[in-house]
Length: 110
Length: 112
Image 1 (cartoon, rainbow over the protein chains, first blue to last red):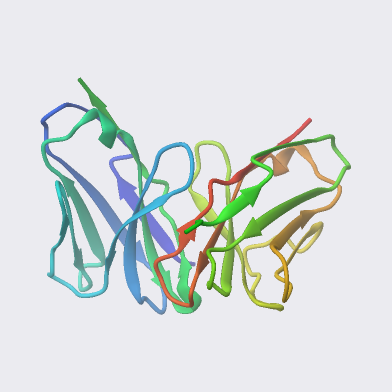
Image 2 (cartoon, rainbow over the protein chains, first blue to last red; image 1 turned 90 degrees about the vertical axis):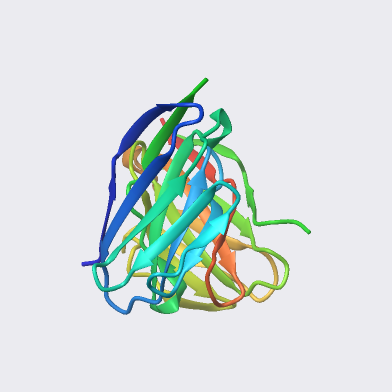
């Protein structure tokens, strides 16, 4: 059975801090790994990673994948209160099916 | 350019009633996925459909649940004879055939 483990499950920081969110996975027919941000409504797409070792960046967010060790990290620098959300990691397998982890609940306090 | 549209946003049903959840994918997307999110849990895959075909329903309970994506009109997730354990947020996502998936805002089903 496909398995995705995210850590930590919950994280509370102050504005300006840097955070690192972890995702490890064991799935069959791996295609890519996706990160989503969920703020009470629809998960919104952040990154899609297909190759090991290549960092993807979008503003203060960045992510990298290690296909040998089967994990990915999501970094957020200079956090803001608007970054408070649940961050979901999801390996994609055949049929573009996504298997989600439980998510990391990030709270950024002013 | 409208994203994935789900309705209703909130649905309350009594035990034993039927729930019908609708999803209109992003224009041009022919692949639809349904996910369920129980309180304090992650999103769980239920079913994957393309126009008029069910591709993978391995995550959907065999009893009481069904899904369709007709040639015309929205995708429908149907739950018959609802029970309290069906209370959850049901998310629909669509894609043109490859990731990433684009998600709707979900339908929150409450069974009383």
